[in-house]
Image (tube, rainbow, N blue to C red; front, top):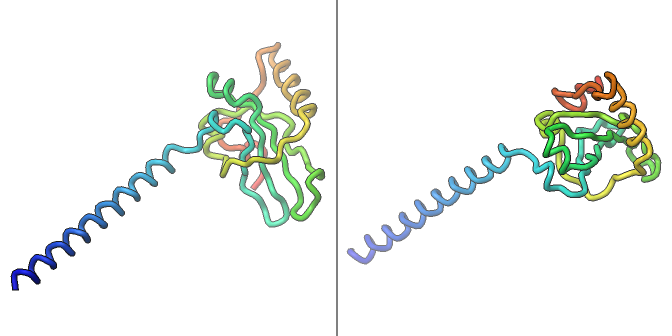
Length: 151
């Protein structure tokens, strides 16, 4: 009889340990998700945006380290019809200035591909910097899609 009792205690201790580890793993995952995306740490600076049934959307952060330092990121928003060739890209916004919090609320997963030639962004950034007597223009503080007026 004592042998059986001892086995049951070992099994119960293992069950408690497994439950404790599962709770700890869940808490760790929740904290990681709550921390948000590492905007400055993703060197490519290419992030997925919510897409539609007919288009794929993403954004490119230009100079992520500079954005992290100032709190204002400068991005380019792009989209492509689903099934279209990789070179068929529409510039939804050649340039947008956005706060770190708004950018973090907007982006999905980091992407490895999707960068385009910077000419459209460069001209948009130059126009933004020239606004307000050279002080710069508006800065989006809600989300990328809200500032674009898109669903």
